Image (cartoon, rainbow, N blue to C red):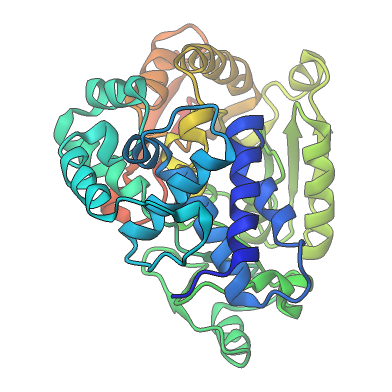
Length: 404
């Protein structure tokens, strides 16, 4: 591979914003990709993937390059040289790469790879929590899997098409996909492609949604005609899945504390042809109280550490702080205590997170079941999805039933 100056500059500019100004990687990359209209798919792919790669391995590359934050541009070029050397890419004779110690880079890499914190490029506190909650062996496997690049998975919108029809239509555009067993609506791309520019996407025939995330709506046992509350709907990936499982029949009340996310859901629902969704912003507890004892099903896709989705959000490794974890666990328990009251007698609820930590998952459910609010509920089943076993995001989901 030959390195092109303008693409490498884009990567360095992006890293400056992500590392030094705290900007979110996905937003920065979106901006970078609009930078030059002449860039083809390979150029854009290089910028996006290299930036993500450097974010993912920040601690390791900085240690090898012997640089510390805040990184100046020279520091970032040194880290870039480490990235290229470890990828086996020949460095061009640009001034930024003068005196790069190639052999020393490889030697340092071998040495640091013996220590998990460097090998998997994670903060000390995260490594400690992972070991404490999952044990050394399981955590080592899981964090290694969470450092892999995520596959692109589509969820077929069955309100508009079938899996077979979508697969054929994409194949005609030279986009090849595979079916996934145990994921009835999923198609996995064989190679990365810009699926958002296709007519099928614009016409609402599919959404991009990880395979593990697709399990959550199915776990809720919804049926057409039910009244379902998606209590932490966000921009509505799971809400839209529920709409297709319910065949547009019945009512889905999508709620969130962030009104702007619900606006995005409104836009997506229109594109998906999902007509049974009503948005309600949670501006006070009144919104929740109005629905006490009224829902057949409630989905609580709780806010969490996001440790299960580091493959697609590698900058979360550096943004997340241990204090946030303590705070979010308190919030999770408050949410399940309060929102569970919307479930009517004989109804069911799913508590889900995109975390792999038991303290955010099964321990929260156990705590709820022992509380006054949870005494009328029983655990029907739960599912722990680990990235190293599934090959997809880490997730947890528990199905609870309120006694009739």
